[in-house]
Image (cartoon, rainbow, N blue to C red; front, side, top):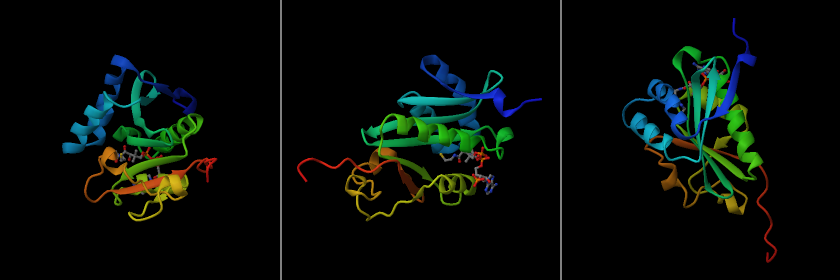
Length: 171
Ligand SMILES: CC(C)(COP(=O)(O)OP(=O)(O)OC[C@H]1O[C@@H](n2cnc3c(N)ncnc32)[C@H](O)[C@@H]1OP(=O)(O)O)[C@@H](O)C(=O)NCCC(=O)NCCS
């Protein structure tokens, strides 16, 4: 029998990132799948949730600018969904971005993706308005960053502040 202690989250580096491919294949179709596999080789960090020696969950993480962490993708293999593992990987990503000193974390999702939206709201994320004050001014607006997030039509951007923006000495 497996227990939560059997599941650990590890960094996937170099050729080890290939171990995440089956989960991405499982989690995404069409252009998302293509883009997720491409992003796998390019992002700063890939975190894998391992059960035995099989990767059953994955996050693709990057810093867009020093203050901003972005979760490009999170996926859990179909057979392992609904057991809190997606939430655990999100907690891991938030913790890493916090350790790195980031001020804000963003994740894009389709609004119909009920588990994803629920997991994000539970963790203090809210939807980012297109016109709100930017993250550097105390809001969550992602001015100048949306193109790097490769948001597709119909997706919403959700964000959470981890710490206040540092006050600049000359203000
Ligand atoms: C989104 C995804 C990562 C969630 O992973 P998961 O391990 O199944 O999620 P969890 O079990 O941690 O549940 C997350 C939340 O969703 C809720 N939830 C789970 N299944 C649900 C469902 N079918 N409908 C509504 N809410 C659901 C849980 O109650 C939980 O909410 P809580 O934290 O408030 O209790 C997973 O469904 C997945 O891999 N989907 C395909 C890829 C994808 O869409 N990724 C997101 C965009 S990048």
